[in-house]
Image (cartoon, rainbow, N blue to C red):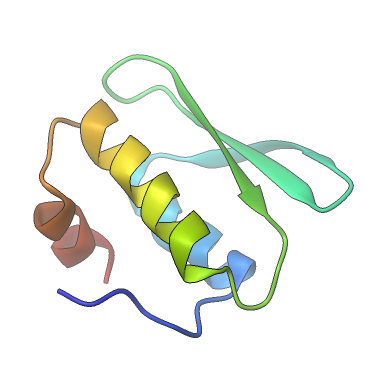
Length: 79
């Protein structure tokens, strides 16, 4: 499955809330999200519009590893 090319950080945060991620803090243009599902997991997302494709791919790979999912399974859940 292809990654969306025009995903803003706000839209990405809304989609990640489906997996239990909540905004815990923001420092400048970086937003920290935390989930307690499957143990505590923290990720940092840049507040950019759109989020660069390489950055998005790295974040999704980290989330997929935390939830023991393949990247395609995670993309189906989110998008």
